[in-house]
Figure 1 (cartoon, rainbow, N blue to C red):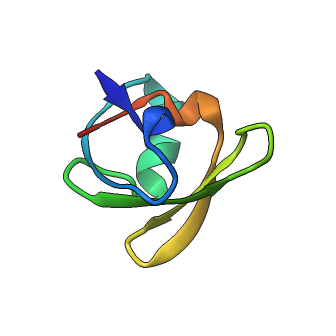
Figure 2: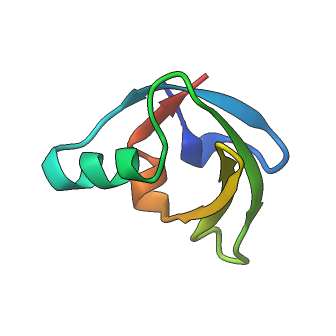
Figure 3: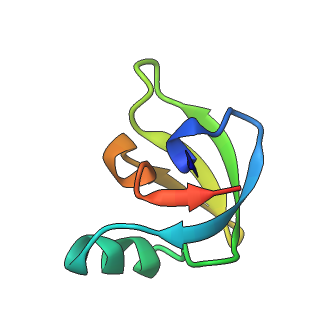
Length: 73
């Protein structure tokens, strides 16, 4: 299983499934990350946390813990 955390900088991936429970999953969905959407990995902070991505035309920073809950292909 590949997650958003495993995606390389400059790579565009498609969301397959969101893992997680309740409020955490809802927060990820509220940011526009839903099944089928393309996510472009723009850059990562020096220590790898957070990761900056482009989703639905806007830029978003996601923590490693949240990125691990997003299954991609």
